[in-house]
Length: 120
Image 1 (spheres, rainbow, N blue to C red):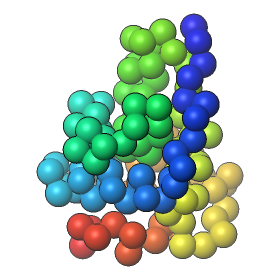
Image 2 (image 1 turned 90 degrees about the horizontal axis):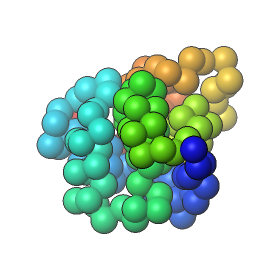
Image 3 (image 1 turned 60 degrees about the vertical axis):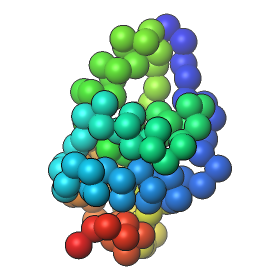
């Protein structure tokens, strides 16, 4: 299996915000979105195929993320990528290492919800 997802989005906060707003607008508030829903949000927001996986780390369950990559013969670091995406939208310094990174994006403390325009 090859390791991919080495390329990082140029601005993780912008990507998380655009894709998160799109997901909320099209599918409502969910703890996790399906792989197909995140793919559609990536396409609508013109997220480069080289960094679209980072959206999946943020908004898919760990199980769905790993299954998607296994089907492609790829290996990516869900926890490491999710941590970086969450830190990009964090309101505080974040004690992220004290939390289970398999939690939904909605369950993490210190998220700056104001970056998600569509979130109420």
